[in-house]
Length: 337
Image (cartoon, rainbow, N blue to C red; front, side):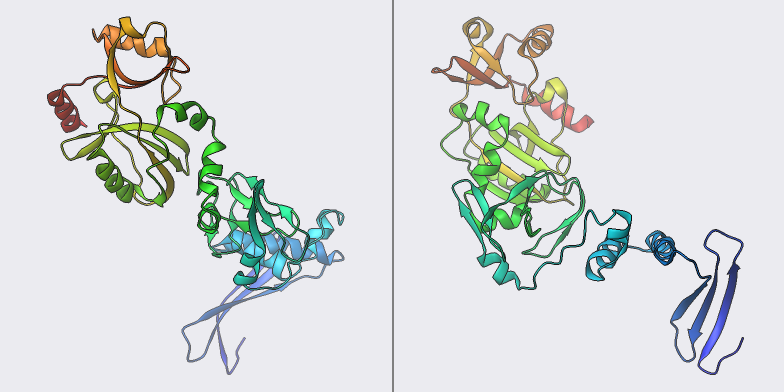
């Protein structure tokens, strides 16, 4: 097999295999690029033959998800209707710029609405359990990239990542917070509004926490990471930011510098030290939803008879934040970790 313009590198005969084809690797003369040609036997079921090649391309592709989306949606792949008995025919989105789509997305009292080439429709919340592309910033987000839900228009398929949703409407911050039970139970123990709500990686969040701890003994932080939502209380020890009950649980503040998460920094009202005798009639709450009697038992085993917390006199409840800890013991624990 010779050709004046191409150089045949390898011929692989696979007629006895499931793919029933011949693969020819070739190189254009004067070029370093290597191409591949596939010669396949015919089939009565052309669509099924195409589907076999489709699986082959998925296996060899570096970005299988992008290949699948582009081949099915952009190319109007007939395999969609063929293998679903035309139950889910492809829908083509009308062309338009980001500015056009952005102008048709509005915030109302019930939430974010989309009116892109259709009547205004309420956008719904979806967990980031599957990959998606944002219709405004055009960024691709893998599964479980955000702890926050993204917004989707069920009519036209327009999607908004949490970052674009909050940038477009500041009120979405409170909407996201109110969707979580923790906020409703913790709100009576906090000052008026969150000190800071923003997207940041671990390094940036640590810097913000240190600034907040310069004027407050304790800071609460709600982190929406790819692993889920975490609610922590932190304090400062010298130049380190540590979780509360540090000597009890010996947990270092684990922040991810590679992933960006949405974080809300909140300041509790004035914390005070209370002995167990003075809080017997109060309902005790913890940030990690641990039952109070479990924590009380651990403290009593260490002969600790007081805790640091915030009391809400109206509801007769107490948010337990910490215990008085010896700085020298904290230093020893940090050096051992």
